[in-house]
Length: 160
Length: 222
Image 1 (cartoon, rainbow over the protein chains, first blue to last red):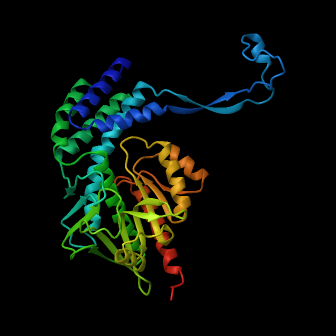
Image 2: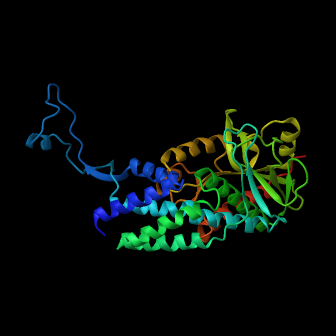
Image 3: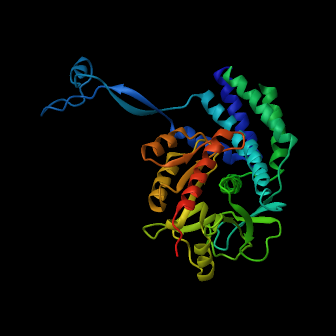
């Protein structure tokens, strides 16, 4: 897949998520992308300065001003590649929808071992800022299964 | 590729309409799931388990908090589990309650197990439990993308306050960066805890089992 194709796929998926009220998934991915990719690089540190030394000297003279011996491993942050960004987004949709549905179903299955439980309700406490509540009853959705298959296929194309 | 994307685009509105899909709801589901895994661990260690509500009888609907609240709150019929081991004082498991740390600051315990005697005291006197009374404390983080390092730093503080042996950071993500941080600082963590990852789930259940084993080995207070 070309770089332009990968960028276009990311744009298309992001727009689809945002327009269906799932923009928070894109937001979490972009936060992760903004943090950058930590990598270790070898560097040889400059020697301690002499008084009146030209600190920002460049060119051939700069090399001679480094400490002798083995280089030191130091950290830097590099940008993520376009295909990594797209894979993050595909994986984020899996977690936000497909795995979340699994978590809901498994929660009910496990709790039902210890009591006659029909539903689980999540409700705000008196001091809560957010006032929404919702109920889960298990989510056996053919559409969620279909989405999982489509994401797997897209993932395979990106990795190919 | 464009055909795949079109099919995904067409599916998303129907899926979005099926239930509550947002980051807070996913986190709530995760807390309920981990609560159930803690009960699984207790059962494996030989406990009897039953549910109780803060107000009224338990009628087949578990009610958990959407955000942290007071264990004593009677704003809703919040549900907790009673965990009973033979010849040991009973325990209770709660979802999303405030606990106080060593420095008397408040912390949010996503899932916590503590003695029933302490929980009853909290309900009657309308006070919050000290984290030092926790047999087990889970910090639960469900993220669509890899969780940021700031969450790891927060957990270092929480576990220093509430007891590093009893506290565990649990996430659905591989969270490689956080694993490094927790290993460096000798903290307990569970990653990729999802129904599709039985090995990672078993590791977390094993940690909870050890906490219950330690509890069973303790001397009973007179």
